[in-house]
Length: 423
Image (cartoon, rainbow, N blue to C red; front, side, top):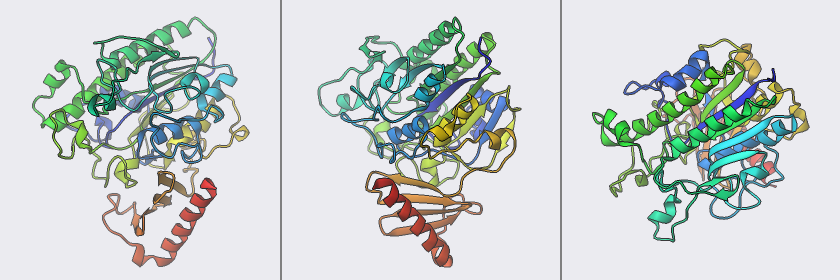
């Protein structure tokens, strides 16, 4: 068995900063995600690269700002991540790693954008943004009146498992992979992008029954998160059984903040869906307020650093690529990356390696944001909002007029970055 570390990324979909018990939830428990924090670290100022699904996933896999990687927003029925774009799966594969994905892709649903063109030896899951959890049909085709599109695949071949719950399927495929992989001498990278708790909110009845005392919206959210936590627990238990937990670097990160979309409801309601909890952060999915991009992130690697840490320094999804690559013995300088190795920050107490960090929503970028130290400037069309996140993490007070020089400097930096990255 290789003494090089293994790597796992768990990604969740559509929930808030306080939707884990280790991050403040009190109405339910996430003991398995808490186990990652207890054996490693939790980050209180970690960000997604985007407030929407495809772009957030792209940031993690490519180590780039999503707009620089060609994925400024969600991928629809055409287009996708270019096979010419380096990914962490490709980079680790070049270093002799075995690679596998099990879950939601959402970076292209046809050649040449499929996972096997992005470094994954094996993959299982669905390609579009959301599916019915039992029929595995592209959910938007069911709700829009268009022809239904079945969306379940394994290594590029369409497969049918009607009636079987998707989270159970993707978890079992991951377990099978881990067991088979142990027959080799190669380390592995396992990418598990869950679609929970993204709509449709399909939780097995026993999970719904456990939380029947909660308001209906919260019942859905908590049931779905508990499904995911149990699935992650199954993977962690298998790592323990195989005696590889301590030498596996694990990262958990949501793709963005919680959805407020009425389509979360299962009864046709047009009311906003309030199921997720941002912990007091302003905004939600599809906004660049903190509630849309600051996400509850965890990391463990017992062979490298002690557990129980709380990291208050700033990190972001695109840091995972260079961090894993450096830990695997690779050279991040051989790639064009916007992220930075954050292992010294986690393991050795170093400060955040970041200066300015940037976000944009969509190609034209009318909605943009920049964070510098404790200050965050949010630009939405002509509206400018400056916050001091150290004293106002909820971004309630606009202090732009109180700091005209800083506001001008941040606007200049933000606009210069956007011009450079889109030219």
